[in-house]
Length: 383
Image (cartoon, rainbow, N blue to C red; front, top):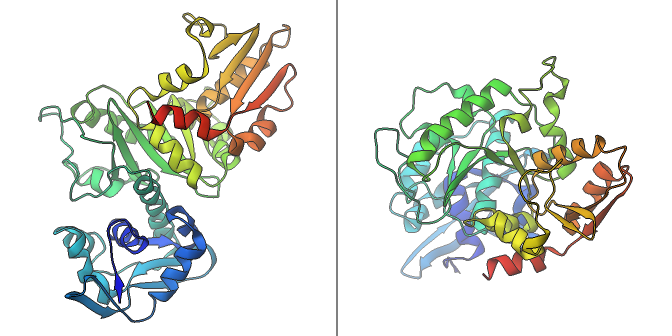
């Protein structure tokens, strides 16, 4: 008999599929050891005796895996659906209502959309944040009093649309996969996966304005200025941000980093899970900078360009927030500094090293310094 225990791989997969419906087989590494998870899924594709207790067990398959290559997808087997009621009294009802009574479209568009949402849910789940729609606070509109979240909470786009605005234009949510509320802030969440994603500037502006409208009543402050961009490769994510450079609009007002002041790239791996934990802490940015620099090294007021510290005459810029929009502004500022002898240093994690070298490597008087992620994040998370 396979016993389902809270926190086990089977339990996590049930939780994930109850919300996302299906999940890409190529992303099972997000849940832990990829070899172990794949072996578990394969085992549970055959009939097993499985249950939360010996007295309440089922003889059934649990998972089914279908499709090829990028479209290979993991779903729940129909005989295992009743197990969802053991996760939460409302989990089964939510699943059946959300996925047309366990019927899924086979179109590439729908599978890809579900996979993007599923990866976001997996990342949030493994970071220890709340993601279950049936336990999340209800999103309130402008007529309702302010509601603070007890912990960082992720709402998938489907649940944002369904809060009070069922009549909203669906084009607002064709690319956004959800919104992540945390104490004092909110991120619009996107997932580019492993390909450059083309944006609809008007659609992203409308999504941002919509989230800005509900945020004051759900996160205690005004405006949504930040986005999380999930993906497999920071280089592809950067191309996604700059995609609308091809537009004929000379002011580039539809470019993604013009819509959101900050666009934090979060890799779809264990590094991204760690980073997500930090980006949802209250005052996380100041905590990073406090861990890196002494107060007297920090700039006072606005400088000639974006930087985080000046140490022995060297201007230091931290990319430990993984903010692509800010990195773009930093590079643009460097390009204007051709007639000075100023020295610059950029701080990054090991997984950012190749990307930073490719993006900044040709700029003179600049060096890249790599800092172990565990050293910084361990200090912040233990505070």
